[in-house]
Length: 126
Length: 505
Image (cartoon, rainbow over the protein chains, first blue to last red):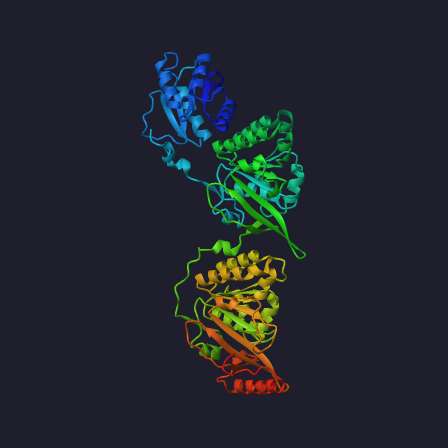
């Protein structure tokens, strides 16, 4: 798989989660971008075309849910699939329609990687 | 939105604590099930305390259990030298090296690219080797090469996250002690384990203490650690281990024959099953012989027994038993008698307890003779601990419905001054037999009394007994004992000593 052509944005306010997931995905061949909250994520999205966004649910300034809604409202970002991650997110909370997968924290990298492969396989490279 | 902190995640399994057994005897007990999978632990200790042995043993045991492991060194002894030192240990298996267990040098990555380079090296090793256990030996260079404390803290947090995300349990080995426990790596890790030396008189013991273990309970306090040809084994403190977990067996009316017929009659049929007894007497009074009768008779009836002894060698015991017509050699051959001999006081208390309980388990013992209490007392680093230890040990034997005779030697051969050498033992046992001997004219004469038999009537007068070619033979009545006591009282009166009563002691 030619992951080198896929840009992936990881959004998390928790330092180690962000850094280590980025490290692992970089090691797996993706081009990684990072943001500390939803507001910063929108800035990254405006700067670079992304194939996938992996975002934490609960963050300061703009949480993951709000980020998804803003992406859906912007024609440039509305087709980008999103993976939600959370230590506290509840299954019965409505998910924005661009959320294609959800993972409880602590994340298991092999599960996340398998999902990323699966999602990107069916998505066109930007 | 409802308070998300009070809810479970989508998959509650995410919060389940998965354990990975260390496979090291006693350590999993201390950790109440093993290390937490994907967690990070710091094992610290001065040189020689066993860190490298522990780290390697964890790896070999992990691979033996079907896992994959990596042992990463920074500035430590060479892999070749380390393996050479370990190859005589029974856990060592050369066939798994590079086939499930990899040794990796990571110092260059650390030196050239600092902590970021080391973290990336760790990532590659975990993923490339598919490791579910990683040991990083010698974390001190990482501290030395860290730009500052914050950088080191970041590294430890990232390492912790990496371990969690890859579900790889990580062990850091560090040449430091709990006294340095304010460093970042101490506060950030999921668990802290300290290996140490402890000295008592001229003896040095290794100990292990789990200072911190996030998420689950563990056994507190320092526990004995032993390094032998089998590697590391841990002996958790018996009283901590059994505290609250021992379910007392229901009281039984079954009687066990002692092997001395008249003594059984004095006990109104024998000792109640699952009770503990002390046989108290001076050196040579016949205590060990009484214990051998007890075990021999049990084995005759198909009840396996363990003699846990500190003094006489197995050969001497078998010879002694043959001289009085007991068939312990034959019973040993059929697995109904086992002699666990501790020839010196090289072992500490918990190691002894573990050996006894393990042997009891192995042969399915129903009877135990401990010869003697003093062996445990001598082994105690803190003598005041002996009574707490014995409470736990005897409680455990009782809970397993094992009938036990605990031999205790007195400093005096007879009389009211005879006393136990560990305060409080009397309250722990249901039965107390007193074996005295005294000089009557030119003869040494022996008396046996039942001082107490809890929850049962018993003979209250002393009896004379004899050591013959058939072992212990107790007189059928108290007449000769009364004669011995009368003579002794007369002697005492003439020497202004305290007279004694023939009605027991």
